[in-house]
Length: 247
Image (cartoon, rainbow, N blue to C red; front, side, top):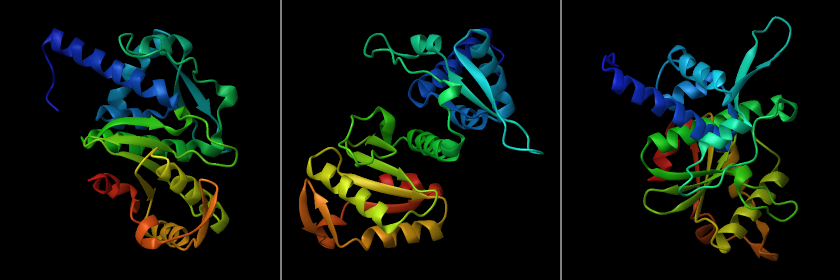
């Protein structure tokens, strides 16, 4: 990337990067420095100055994560309540009251959260997605029904649910998840579901387990799965080709 020498252009670019980070953390609440670098399209070292500027302004805070004896400390960057006040568009949005709280941080879900965030960045950078809504911002579902990891709106106006599958779950878990998605599609909440896994082996197992479900409850009605009907809008992919499934 060429060095920007014009002070005005350099200042505008710096502000653009700060805004991009705050807009991302508005929904995600926290992330890793490496994911921030991917968001900005720069090397990790190049993103540190921007994060430091936001931290000095009290808009974000860094939090160290101890991974264990002999392992390097892992840092996350989270948005503060003040940061949320600067992250929304006053012309069209309300501020989000939630902010990063270390006491509520879960190391157990960290890898999954970062994988979902990378899928978001990949999707938005592809130009095929104009809106991404994280699962925890979706409307509440009935007890026992899992929210998807995200719902996106494609540039062509299609609403798609996204599930990031880092590992394989039980057949019962997938039966319940499939029932939830088929019910949601029956109700018009979204029209497709994409499961994305880190590798082909995981993808193939996830696909086999989901497509192997024979009966589910759809909108409260016991239903025999008709592959021609119920599998038509289900897709299975790997991280590196995730955006290709959005075509």
